[in-house]
Image 1 (tube, one colour):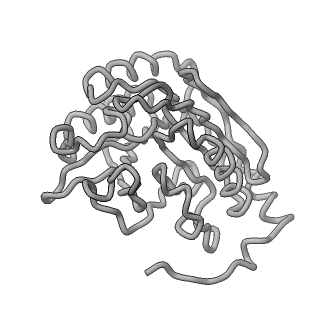
Image 2 (image 1 turned 90 degrees about the vertical axis):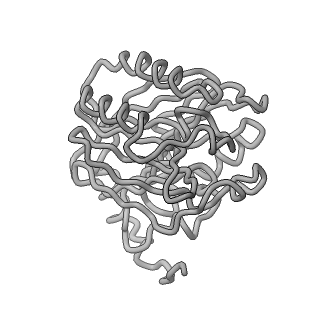
Image 3 (image 1 turned 180 degrees about the horizontal axis):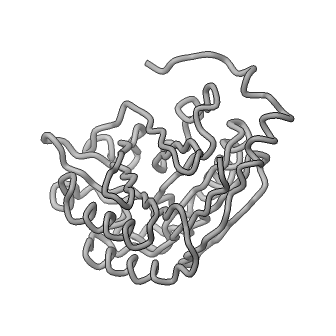
Length: 258
């Protein structure tokens, strides 16, 4: 497992304007000045968190996925974030893990946000996604999943890094800032949360608070209120050393989610 260079974009999202968001994000990403392994974008990065799936959903391999492939090729790295996908007559809040060669994996959001009636529009996923990059086992999740520690539990050291892409409102930012370090410490893994900033189409303000927390709960990165494109390195030895010195995961309860 080698050290991993991450670039995250905490951005303002233009409400339900796919082309404008893709153009803006591409422009912002042009500020990357060093080789990176992974670019992380927020939840529903091309539309904002909307229930208008019928109008905004794309098929697999549609315009936004083609854009992701182009960006992955341009920067010779993986790019990830979620968007609205229509498939077999259903809508999904789907995270795409896109490689430079165009191969991709996906994760469908398991926990749909009932307060916004997301569960009335979208279909919940049933399976976690574990992907590998430079020897790291990575488990990406989406926003509301953060509140469910059983779903995120790192059983048998399944992952070394968890990623949360989000549209998490400022009114509950304290929860976000509390739960991300908790998930990092209890799972002895890095946790990176990438959120948006600004008001959405419902006048809900998002303060960002994007962050990276190491396996011991230390803050590697944190940014509030402003757009930010930031590249940093996460250290493989921090995971290895933490689990060797404090072998808590081996004492965890065994369970299966059905």
